[in-house]
Image (cartoon, rainbow, N blue to C red; front, side):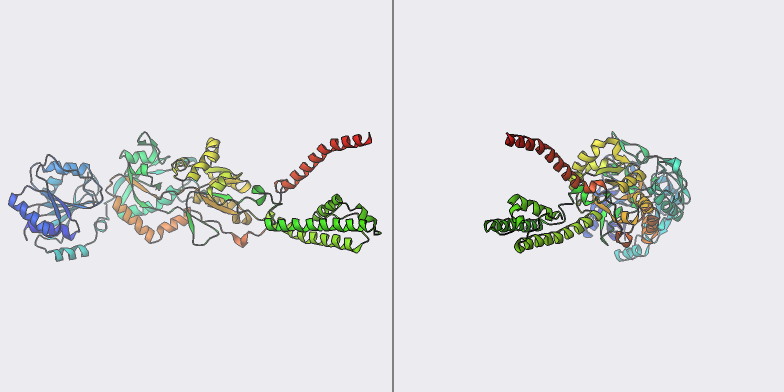
Length: 599
């Protein structure tokens, strides 16, 4: 099989159907190559003017093949541009064509010091041999390994060869102990006591979680880290990042030994090789259901904090029925008393049961107060007895319901708007993204919450995990906190009853966290493959369980009695104060009316 037939078959066997040819062949040879490519459905683009090389972006929506003729004039222009653009990666399948016998010195002379890193798909084919070519690091010598590929192979034979052959990632797992520049985050060095210190999991959780995973990946791939320490993840300032993201943006690092949020602004200056943990906050009361991380954690307030507990025991229908019963009892009592007076029946109490006196009796009965009147007529006695009996039943049910309401939290806060309109104070854990996700949220409710509850507080709204969780335990306070930090403190400081009262309301969705790596790094796929293997074998889950505390369980259903404070009975005190005020205001008018009557 000649080269014009072999080239389309080679790329078709790799499922690459767009090929750019940098060849210095005769016209009839190029036409033959084009016809063979058309027969296999491979689109061929032949570059004739090597001074105007097409763009070779490192990443795009599809794979491409590039066939390159060794020995063509000005060929170094193509290789130089491909190296600068990092086009030697898995997106491009490179096939170098050499007409002579295989010679290692020729490969070294042509490929020189170009960045053909471990993610490259580069094959050099001579008349007698085909080899895989890459280098473990810039400045290191080229590594050449023989491939069982020959120019006379058919499509079927090539397909079978690719199926038998390990992938490029599997073939290049040995990086020969090279050093890769890396950095990790230690935001509070004064509290750092080692990568395995579990005493304070709330500090630098993600670096501590990611460190053993990347150390294992380095051992697996046989390389080492030239590790440095920084204290910031990185924020953007006029297009330039500081902290770890800034070092990766400027190419001073190869990989970050931590996990960072995969934000769109960071994607412009760095890449991510693999997600580590999924930030989901388990709901403690609904099994097998989850909400996204970014929720406010709070203790559902008591009913007395959001409503008047003295009007909650009965529904509107029950209140209306009770009012109708007692109003009917008062009217019946007044009617019977009037009838007794009209018939001149011998009952002194009947003469005192005027309409206002009957109203006073009914109100006293509702409040479990007796009466100084003792009618002789059985008709009046029966009305008063059954009125008091009905009041007893109603008051017993009412009192029991009031006690139950005082002992149980409310369900008043279910949405972000409920939280915004509630008397609760809000706080957010002090992190690098503390303001960003509220400001960028597309939810109108979340933006309203930020404007009304958080922005007026200024920097006082942002607290440490320990301070925020303590306020969460002791007062009407909602706190947006990282899962690992918050749950670890909650499990140590909350009582069982307090744990059972925890609720969450989602404020915004956070992106995934992943290991950051230099943009267009040649080690992205290698590290991603090994981190994915760690996730599949359970090592990532083990690290998650170690560093991210699980949601505290509600043992025993949270049984126990909550103490009742002054704020719980405040409506009763307010009613008493209103009564005192009205009495004080009516007293002068009554005195004036009495004086006018005397005159």
